[in-house]
Image: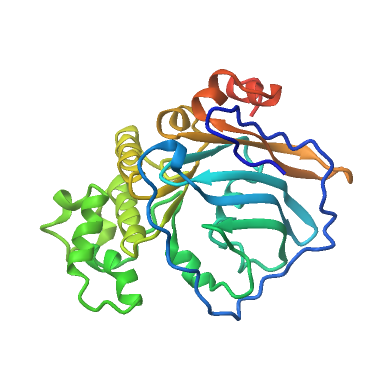
Length: 307
């Protein structure tokens, strides 16, 4: 098991050790429970040494039926930081991201081993309500996916779902946080589908933060955007990390270098049965991982020798 050590210590995770899980303790998801996670802890003081882990991931493995997509992943994600997942296609980055708010639950045949603890609570415990998990942990997808309704109704959807029938202030606040308010404040009743791609993606961010999450997950949020829109999303992430913990999957290493505080490098490995599976090679501060990686595979990837 590897967790992030003190901030002054190098942080590397190399998953070439024997796997403690043989699949015998895999857990199928039980969605019958409707208990909620405890309310969020107070925000930590604004200095890095005091930031507690929002997520403690301990030897986490995931299978799609008999295919093991992730093998024995261990690392911590800290509060009010941007953590980037990088690595070649098919190495499990998005699967890991989706595991952080239980979006894999509904896929037939998915099972897990190991642990993901969110703010000290076992994320996959039977008593935890997955719906509450997804309120506390928002998601922004690769392709902008606004609802085919008005701009206002897109942002108001979540608050209304949770019982707020007059969410005007929430809508304005979320659009301001998403750096979109000035562009749309006079056309809130117009269709969200009429917005540009970059505006639609910022609208999706506003929709996610309207329900006051603790964490925002972003799965390649800029891959379908032009360079100017990409810059706006990156600036938005940097603005939002003071209030939220952000985890991003990206194929753009320059983007990871620009916006992230820490980076996790995933790759594919061959397990004992000859099957390809996703592993975490290294996790460290972004500046350290990009300039002085602790594993040759990381250096080979960031220098373009493969991937």
